[in-house]
Image 1 (cartoon, rainbow, N blue to C red):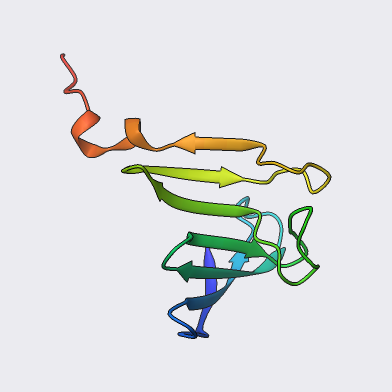
Image 2 (image 1 turned 135 degrees about the vertical axis):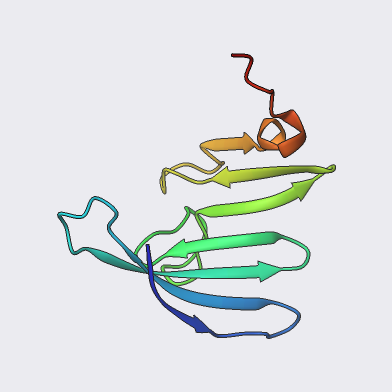
Length: 105
C-alpha cells in the first residue's frame, strides 16, 4: 500500500516521484520511503530508501528498473549489492493481455 505521494520532478526530462510503502502483512507498521524515477532513455527506476547497487553511492543506487528493450518490457533487479550484474531479468511478455487463455469449464 502506498501511504503518500510527493511529485519531485521534472528535471532534465526526468520525472521523479516519492512514495511511502506500508508493510502489506497487516501486522507490522513498517514503512519505507521509495523514489520512482522516469528517465526517457533508461526506463522506470525504483529506489527504496536504504537500498542500492554495487557501483552507485548510497543515495544514487536504483536496484529495480523497468525497461522497454527491443520491444519487450523487462524488469531488472540488482538483488545483491555485492554483485556487479543484475541478479534477475524478468520478461513481462507472457503477462501481456493477449496471452491470456480462456478457461474451458
